[in-house]
Image 1 (cartoon, rainbow, N blue to C red):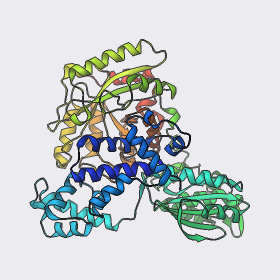
Image 2 (image 1 turned 180 degrees about the vertical axis):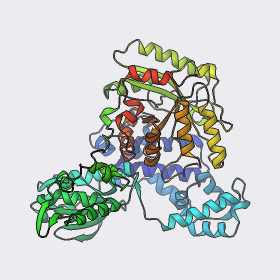
Image 3 (image 1 turned 45 degrees about the vertical axis):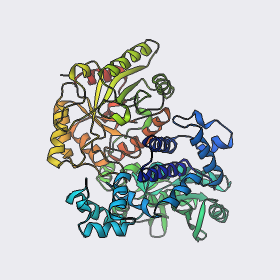
Image 4 (image 1 turned 90 degrees about the vertical axis):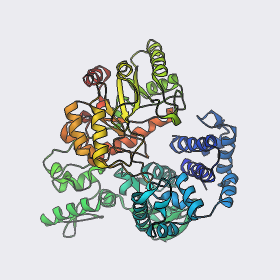
Length: 575
């Protein structure tokens, strides 16, 4: 079966988790974590590189040992190192890592101190009050764990959008190769750019449904065929992801695409609108009696209902239908609108490419500018910069800028916001930079009032420019810290600074609702990749999808401005 980058990344992540639970060498653990991140976000499928005999050690952070493991995984679907670790540890212990707030170190403590190996044992220990007695836990943590376990056990499995995209791309390519496919689209929450996807909804327009269905069920990644009728099929992939296929006649393509894209609330609102006009709307078309009035395209269906075509990202029944009727839909931001990126790292801290390489890739993508924003000194795990090293990098940037034409590297820093709201570097150093990106990387557990005041104090610093990943969440990994985003947005407006939409697919932070809040208050949002390698600029497409869900237009986004317009905006944040 084809091995995707997500599969390799999952194996490396599990190895890192198991090694950390075992208490292995931190440098070895970090190597696997870095490799998992790099592989999972790499734009090309690594199996293709293996098939072509390319040198995998040219990938950032991938040495000979990791390269050999990648080849092993691609060729066999397994990794001997992982199987060995699984034999050494309790078989279900990695399930504990799916609970927000439980990293490998805490899982190790729970295992060694309370012999907790399963979710059921974890819940029982929390109910019995035994977890609060462990160092570093406490009653509040124990209550949060109990709530998180209950929530985890009740939720259906969902995967991140970036992972779903890999499986979708391969399956779409497989079906297209059948020759009978006239049109194909991945619908559902995937098309609406939701942060996570429960399953994949595939639509195919064809005049030979039987051939498409045979091709679908013969896909080598299929583990189980649930259904395979003339118009509908459903399979479970070996990854556990369910894929549902609908075979559509071309005449009903638009109506089916509309119906299966959703959301449910949007579809209900459209059907109600149709009923009020004496019509009927379903996945086969828009009808008056038995006469089909529209159905071949989404635009045709919307127009017959008196609406503009509504972009999929807006279809959540949050005012889009009224806006479409009044011709007031936003002209949503696109990837092509971005003129640069305001958050990126290099080898100077925890990045994997040189300053020159990152600049070259940004220019290849057509950017006018790229901000280099290394971590500051407090983030020792990332080799954060102190004042001396930061000023040395600024000198390197100045020298490189002398060689560019029509492109500029901006001097910045991702500076830690400390618990008292002060910044990790002094003002006289921050004043030498083009922009200062403030970020929280610690004390996520502060109360709502404390966390909010912490950020507000940081935003008042003289050179504060952008608040990075404002809620600190990691999707399916760490919940957002408790913060009053309405106050943060209003303060950003008053202060004249900006908010980041961090496009890393594990963050996508701001949420869509917070993007809309920023738009309503007139606070510009920077869609940033948080790139740690050249490949990471590909994150931007996920950030744009999130921004579109938040109704953002190009004018609402800071880095859609050309450099000549951007620099005065950055300068205005300086006091």
